[in-house]
Image 1 (cartoon, rainbow, N blue to C red):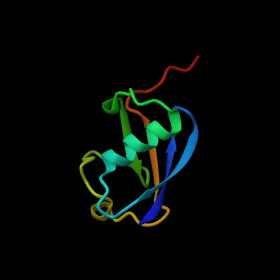
Image 2: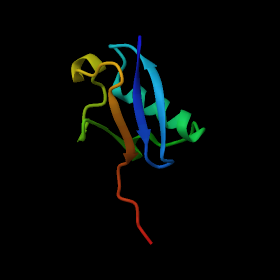
Image 3: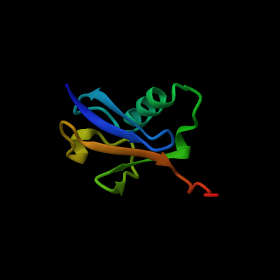
Image 4: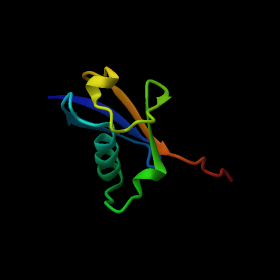
Amino acid sequence: MFSVRVMVTPVWDQVSLPVEQGTMVSEIKKRALSEATGRQDLVLPDYVVKYRGAEVFDESQTLAALGAGANAPFIVLPARRQPVR
């Protein structure tokens, strides 16, 4: 068991999640969004995950497959660009 850091940009909050090497990226995204926003009804395909600046296209990958270890930085952000006014 170790922790990873996840920045959730829609709410500008960083959460620390306890995970294992077999945890899938999709699970990290789901847990980080629900913890940061407090909502369970978010549409998960509307968000993407980035690791070390690159988008993780296959979210069924495990942390071991990505080579992520303790304190690994992830970012969860909307899949579409947000309009700025």
